[in-house]
Image (cartoon, helix red, strand yellow):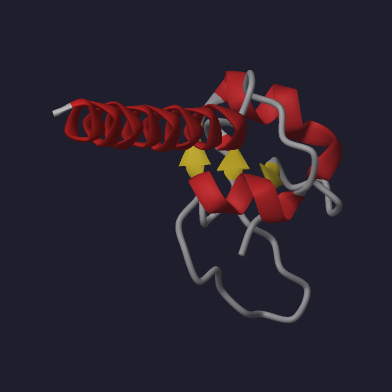
Length: 93
């Protein structure tokens, strides 16, 4: 009986540890704030990039975007340094 109780406790401890590790991984991968380190990270959440309202994509090669950008003044301002061509859309794809 003591062996079964010890085994049950060990299994419960292992399950609790796994649950804790999963929760930490989820928390660690969640972006903090609205500013992203680079376009790769930003596009994971916003595949078409982020744009200020009213922005129009002006591509020099005549192409068009694969995805539509997410329009948000706040997100754009937080990530405006990633707008290389100055068209009001950061990290367009």
